Image (tube, rainbow, N blue to C red; front, side):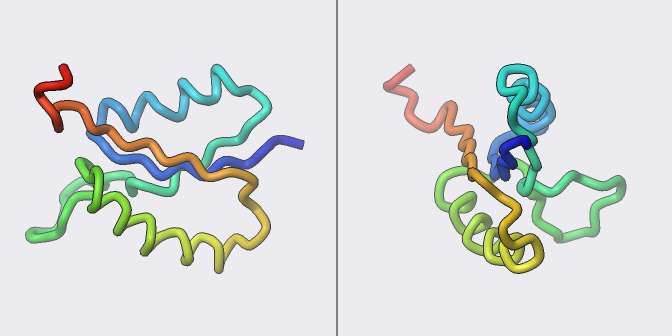
Length: 95
């Protein structure tokens, strides 16, 4: 039986699009389910915040909102939670 991993990820489209295939290729005993960010749909509504680009505190806030919902609707499904926070370019002196 595969280990179910819920993935809460921040960052841009390139990171999010490549993350799950990378994880599946390197951890074949796991089933990765992306919980955040939501997949962008064509024609976003004006004024609606995109899920992409959330990092640091805004990603934490999104997880605090989304995790209880996932646990309520899919109890006992998740074995592990992975948080991927794309913080590049946040501290220029460390580069």
